[in-house]
Length: 345
Image (cartoon, rainbow, N blue to C red; front, side, top):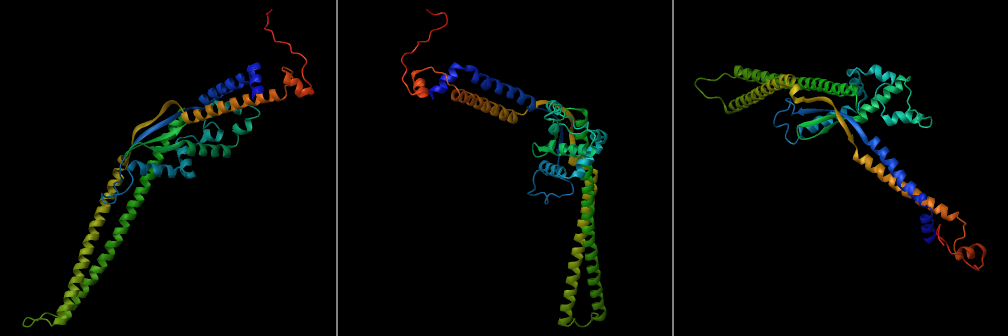
């Protein structure tokens, strides 16, 4: 251990430079890479009017449901492509002008060694389109902040094109929701209409059976019906009443479904209402990324310093103490020369 300490004190630049300079450079780079612009829009959500109060029991909050749906839509390439088209960015995407590279990425793209990793060909429209789709998927998201409030955020956005992208995402999602709600409403109406038709047929058949029985077995004015006829007539009347009740219930459900379907179309804007339009946010420092990079810089800086001290010690054959003579030549030193400070007597 002593030789390494001696080397460290005799050659302070060996460890001072890497231990201080490397973490400093990494810290500067971490701050540059960790600063991130974003575009953000806030949305107020509520439970869809297609659902009644009993159907919403046990469901997640409206904001969580909408956020899950939005993020799941982002997994589909067609939805992301529709957003890019709605934002009017197709031409810029094909030419490679969107999404914009960060300042550090642009600098690395200009260096010969890192250009293959960070360059990207602006003449390859298909590659540029895939890069844009990947950027939308990785940077655009819906984040829940309460039961009814969520934020649509595009990270890394710092231009008006990014603002247009978030606005297009909101419009595209609302259109998707409106189409889905209309389809669900029509499916619900068709389902209850089918029940009404089936119950109506059953009611008509039970009415026919009851009238046919009464025609074939008319009531006598002087004597009561035989017990068997009375029992059969009671069963037919009970069947008719059951089918009538089911038919009236189906009619009520159909009417309710039609009313809720009409309300869902007219109130679709209130189910997903944009409170704050997309806007550019100030650059924020990503503390997690910055902290990890700075920690890595400190570790590597001290590691390189320790390695340099070890290498300098291993390859140093300078004779400074009697022990060095014994190790190198196998003989004891005859005399030692005391060290003098510069300018001393």
